[in-house]
Amino acid sequence: MPWRWSPETEAGTEEGTETKAGTETEAGTAPQAEAGTVDAEGFGPDGDEPVGGFVPIELAQTGPRSFTLRADLVHELRPGSTGVGPDPLSALGPGPATGPATSPTTDPAAQPAVVVVPTGFTTDLASVPFPLWALIGPFGRHTRAAILHDYGCSLLEPPLRTPVRYRERAAVDLRFRVALLDSDVPRLRAWLMWGAVSVGRVVVHGSAVRVAALALQLVVGLGLLGLAVAAPLPVPWRLGALLAPLVLSALWGREWPVPMIAHYAGALVLPALVVNVVTAGVLTVLGLGWRGRATDIVPTGVGDG
Image 1 (cartoon, one colour):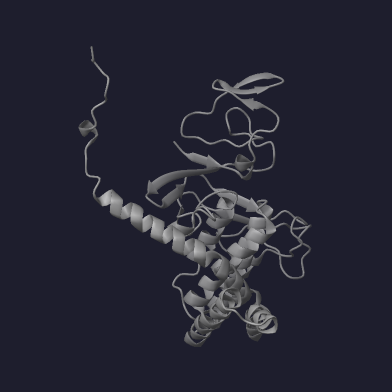
Image 2 (cartoon, rainbow, N blue to C red):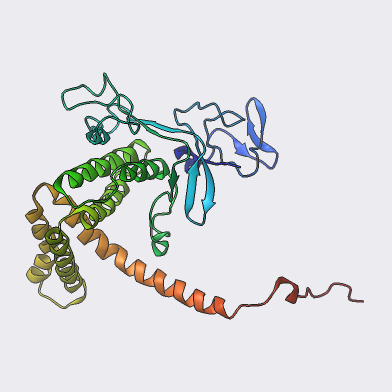
C-alpha cells in the first residue's frame, strides 16, 4: 500500500475524536483509513479528495531508505505566503522539472511557479544522519520540500565544481527553503535545514579553495565557541569568542548565513550528536550478543497446575 503524508498529519484531529472504528464528527463516524495509509485531517474518508489545500504524497518503500513516488508530486508556490519572489527552481531552465515558471520581471502572484516531480522518482526523503533523527526526522512536515530538493539535485548530475553549477544548486537550495516555509515548517527549523543543504552545496559543487576555507573556518569557529562556553575567560574575551564566528561569516559576502548557521547550529547539535552516536554504539554492541530465536522464549505460567 502507498504511504501518504501531508503537513496536517502532525497537527492531529482538531474537529473530531479518534476512535477504534474511525473518527467521530458531528455528521457521524467516518470509516478508518485502510491499513498502511496515513491520511491527514482535511481529506475525505477515501483520502483522495483534498479539502485543506494539500494533496497527499503517495510513496512506496523500495529499500531501507528509498521511497518511490506512485503519483506525480505537484507543488505550487503559494504567492505571498513567504515573502519570496519568483521560483528559484526556474533557474534550471525549461524542462520536465518545472511548469509555468516565473522570471525576475514577472509578478509571481500573476504567474505562480509549479514544480512537478514525476511518478517513479526515487528519494530518501530528508537526508538526515541517523544519530540526528531525534532532532529532525527523515519525514514530517518537511517531506514535500525534501522530495523537491532531491529532484532538483538529480537534475544537476554530474555534480560539477563550476560556478554555473554552484549557482544552479544555490537556486535549488533556496527553493527548498521556500517549500519548507510553504509546508508550515517553523521558520527557525527551515533556516537550519537550508543551512545544512547549503553546506552540502559547498562540499559538492564548491571549489577546493572554498571547501578548505569552510572547513578551516568551522574548526576555528567551533573551537572559539567551545572556549566561550567551557573556558574560564573574562567576560570581554568570552563575548568576543561568541561573536567571532559571526565576524568570520561576514567574509563570505552574500553567503554569510551559511557559515553562520553552520557555526552556531553545529555548536548546539554536536553534543546531541555525540550522545546519540555513543548510545547507538552501545545498543549495537549489546545487540550483537542477542542471537536468540523467538522460540527460545518460553512463556511462564502456561499450563501450570
